[in-house]
Amino acid sequence: MLIHLDPQSFSEEALLPAAKILQSGGICAFPTETVYGLGANAFNEKAVSKIFEAKGRPQDNPLIVHVSDTAQLKDICYVTMQAKQLIAKFWGGPLTLILPKTDRIPRTVTAGLDTVAVRMPSHPIANALIRLTGLPIAAPSANLSGKPSPTTAQDVITDMDGRCDMIIDGGNCLWGVESTVLDLTVSPPAILRPGAVTKEMLSAEIGTVIYGTGVGAPKSPGMKYKHYAPQAPVLIVEAEDAVSAVSHHAANYEKPGILCFGYAKEAFHLPIAIYAGDDEAQYAARLFYSLREFDRQGADVIYAIPPHSGGIGDAVRNRLYKAAGGKTIQ
Ligand code: TXA
Ligand code: MG
Image (cartoon, rainbow, N blue to C red; front, side, top):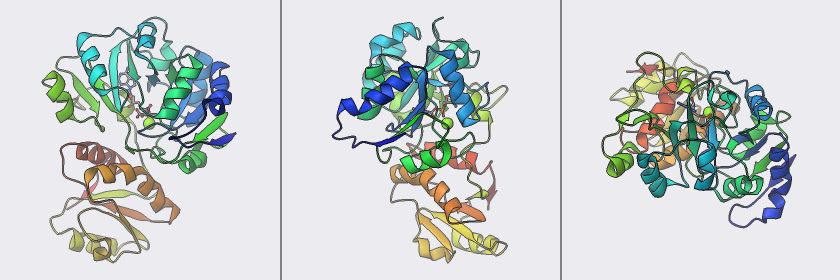
């Protein structure tokens, strides 16, 4: 079932069938301010395992539990002082916190970890849906495992049609990259995945915050898998003279594409050129949609000009480097 709702003006009644599906152990895709999520009742192991199946997600990659009210947290996790401070400042919004879990959250959700990821979205549809169910909702991004996260309902349909009980179309996602994941069970707190709540914003609130390193066993199990990858290989352009490096390299391909930032897209003279936007936030909002668009247009290679680091540019660079499997051209 597919329903269309305008996030600025929808009737909550229209969400009741979706809430029923979640309450009775089904799975439903819904918009958030970051990317679309695929939700299930976080207390229901059987419902949660349907998510892993629908996505083809490895069992050892834990899910984020979504709430609509901080009162729900007492059944999910132990809320530290630092967590309280960050919740007051950044919720609802694109910040996920890793905290010690309670016994009520099944291990299927946390992939056997003693910690749980929690977040409160700001998206009006996500919020109303969670509130109507009266439940915490476990929800990963609504893509097939390994594909770019969906930022439009059409992208959800492409990946999830026939694999879930309902899809709610609420238009395009605002941020376009998944929430920042911050581990508050370590000192100093570590960013396991950069997002729209930036390192700078977090440090201003709680002092030193570091980027979690990939050294040893990955702390955020999801980060070890190939991610965000379109069909065509992605290459990050780190060359000073991007135009000449790309045109030289692209001579080996039939239908090369360029994801362009800081240049006019015509400058590259490639058969496919997508403009990533005027600033890092626009780049983030268009990134996953653009990667999927190259596939739709049949690109056989994708060159991407990365934004500078800092702010939300860190989130874009992180996703691009994962999509490229670290491959660059100089
Ligand atoms: O913006 C978002 O966060 C979206 C929307 C739908 O809310 N959700 C999302 O979920 O991106 P997912 O499952 O695609 O990514 C969750 C990330 C994974 O990298 C996972 O490994 C990490 O969070 N994670 C979840 N629980 C964790 C835990 N207890 N400890 C460390 N990392 C955890
Ligand atoms: Mg995901």
